[in-house]
Length: 362
Image (tube, rainbow, N blue to C red; front, side, top):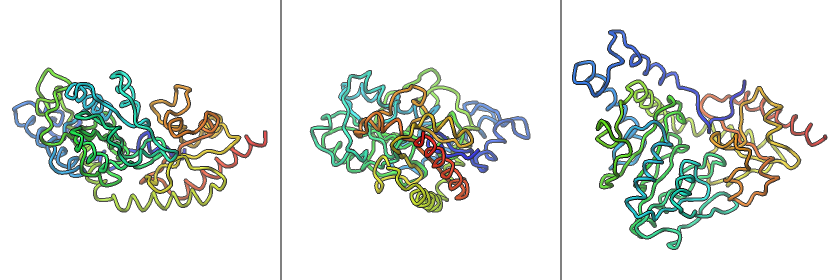
């Protein structure tokens, strides 16, 4: 199988796997210890968790604290639900946010910020930012790869006395996280780490109430036993991402150029300049994306967000960009990363083009 679904999840890095193994059992039988325990094995586990926290934080702005969560979805729910209470429900977010944000905005009765045909929010306008409120703006869109001007919007939010929450899941470990956000959600499994762990970064001075209570773990902000294995895996993946960020970016940019050269006639959804080049969302008239997915079972790609792919509905991201239903149904998302080879990508493109041509001939 050729794997081209790196936005949904990434393969586990060998370095992360090796770092985790001792904390699943351990040669001395104590690697599984609870890091809240006060005996020697527990203290060792606690030290490992704190070292991992430092590694995760090294890819984030200075002046904040990292709180481990079960994933970015929990982190976003925490930031939005508790953050909304802090600002009297004066909350908004872009129309192309992840479902973890949009569904919270819907529950809160909040409006959304429109995007243009390229999937960009544009320059911040004061009327779009609730005074002393909370704005949610993702860094890199998970469906079309566009990169939003987060720092600019954070500055504008602060001028209105508002806070900015950034979903940085698709950008963390891939590009530099800009200064400015007050809260940042990240996930391990999008940077070659394990599933089941993420984090919420909270800027110093932001007094966000706890989301889960009952034990006082994670600085009293997120109760529940912390997994040393998952934390260490996340930390190792973050260290590798930090060391390889430039090389990884060059690799995906090269693969982007290969794809663009070999897919003439296909239209790119989203900006071709303000974007992460490991994401290519494309469409071709006369092609049904769902059928293409069924025809090409040896290639793993998607029609959009993995979280919403089974709904049968056209992508909310593409709809917000003004893409009509027929065009949205002809769209597919290809995602590549650190372990994708040029040969794999070229072979996949040939297969996709052949299957698309067969559809159009029928």
